Image 1 (cartoon, rainbow, N blue to C red):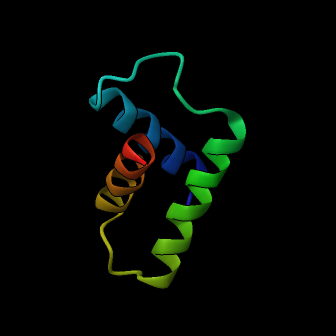
Image 2 (cartoon, rainbow, N blue to C red):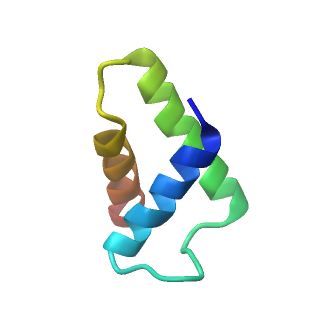
Length: 63
């Protein structure tokens, strides 16, 4: 899975939730989100990447 693609999708998702630049996550938090998303995709290859990213960002914003 392309890490750059996941980061781009995370940024887009934050924008959809009304979070604009600067992003509400630091470099370490972004790495954690990317790692979490890629781990979920590796465990369940059939999972829709778009949904996994949206779920992770939503959880980050509400958690």
